[in-house]
Length: 173
Length: 201
Image (cartoon, rainbow over all chains, first blue to last red; front, top):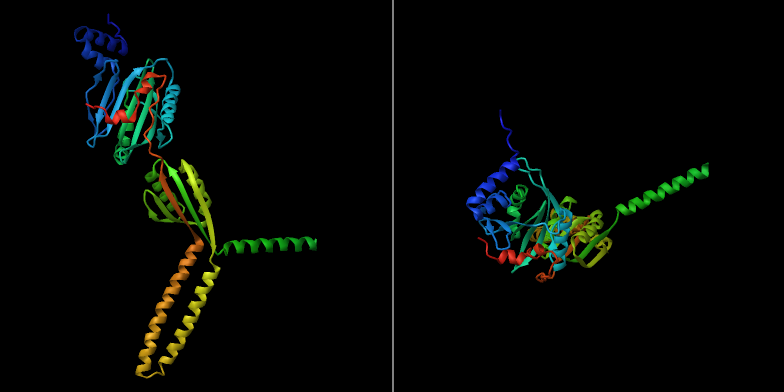
């Protein structure tokens, strides 16, 4: 008699649980953190687990343009519309100026994961004597909010913009 | 019935005259605008691209100034575009100059020089060597003046067709955004300056 295999999420959870029993800290990062493909042309940097238990994924372009995604707790639990507006309103109140209309994006939904909706904002920021572009993106995945940031001098940002947006679409909570 | 036909004919004639007057406009339109924008470079790029789409061209394009020639019909849409691009429209000054006087003066000067040139050329057959040299000198001067006047006429014709727009682009006051606390903890962690200056390994 053949045993029916457990569904994929259950198998993954089991694998994580077994691994956690041996090397807890290491696997909290690899099993529990968000995943993404670094933007093309960027060097992926290490995942880090900070004291506040926020997961951070980072990548950097050869020119030093930064890209970062972190996962934070969806608390109070709200949807994408709420958090995107909360972020936009807060930055606008601080004096940030948008350089384009807010835009939505959808993750590719790797494996059997359903695609998720996200929203990003692009801001023009003064930095020294230069004009920089700053991207902030929000994606809500159940108990987590994924917050992405990317920043670079205007021309450098324009060069890597498509790669950054493609990377956002590869995000998985 | 005859009265009605006559009335319709009169109305058509008036409309035709009005249309002809509109086509025969001798006005040179200008627009001077001063805008405050978040990103002058992007705004200048967008204005220049829009102007080319409308069949115009730009004369000067920098981060702080765009001087463009646009068809007269595109002047109103250009003002609408500027309104959309600007965070604040500091000043918009439309203007118009009637070119008729300048065109008539240039045309009259051109005609008189062409007449003198024709007369000088007629004298050339009957002149002796020294007279021929003097006439040739005069002809050269006249030709130069005629070319200059023809150029001026062409410039005035262009001014009739294309308005001149001078758009000054000022940078938004580049004050660093003020840090304000959010009630949502994670939003306090989204900060451009912290992001670009912080350690990143």
